Length: 221
Image (cartoon, rainbow, N blue to C red; front, top):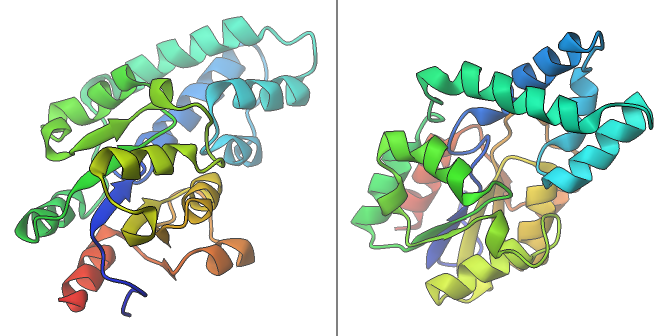
């Protein structure tokens, strides 16, 4: 499949797209809930994917009730996440090969993530990937969070490329909404969330993995 326009830059999400953190986060949330004698349903976690922390907090509080110890739970999630991720967070398949392909074409690239800069450093630093991106728009740099287009617009601005000429890669529904609202050509690479009819309508393509994205770019010439 050919993309609708030549790609002049690529903007990546991070969690669930570059690194396999979403499953780790779910395991940490489930463990923290269990410590309080509660159960963390996977369908609840799916609602949180791609959302900033304060929005996720409200959904969790709504599910467990006003008396739920949100602060204690978040502390537990952080502790369990650190324990589970101590051995390192795995890269998603095709990441290095795609970055190599972008290098070969001298295409600039950025990250637009709802995670904090320390989280980016923790996830990508051990893999030596920080320096392979020209800009990183982490949570601290965003005036509005996904599904607002601001993270992607800021990434395009940092690269000096018109958003319409950027390819955005996302795994979450809110990420796809944000990238599409920014006017970018958007490919969804599903992780824990299946593509819906809405996603099919917003994205130019649903890819199985980043190897497929790389093949599409190579097909563009």
